[in-house]
Length: 112
Image 1 (cartoon, helix red, strand yellow):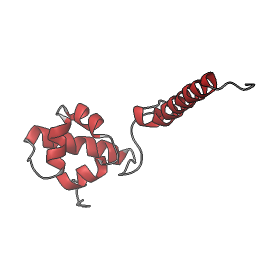
Image 2 (cartoon, helix red, strand yellow):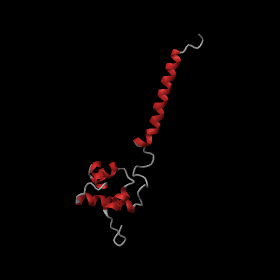
Image 3 (tube, one colour):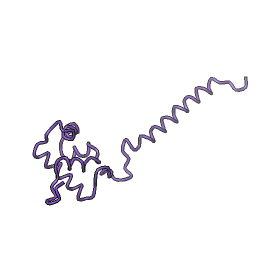
Image 4 (cartoon, helix red, strand yellow):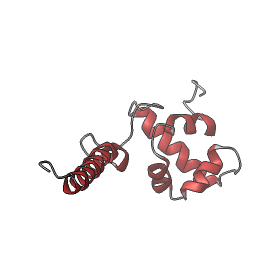
């Protein structure tokens, strides 16, 4: 980043936005997630309008104090698929154990 005029390069902007899910960035900018990945990996050069949108979003995130790895824009308490995945895993695991216990005990005759 150039400290004289607070202008970001595209690389600086993408670094600032790296802590936000690509789905959210792409939706905000108005491009596909694949196109955003191609821009991040240097396989595509964004058009001026897209580049300006990326820079504007990075400026707004930087002025709000968000930096890479600083979390996402999802409010706390609103679970995402990744956050609630552990709960689903425990629920399915308990169900599987219950089914196996039921199968074992239904074929087992305790007093014979």
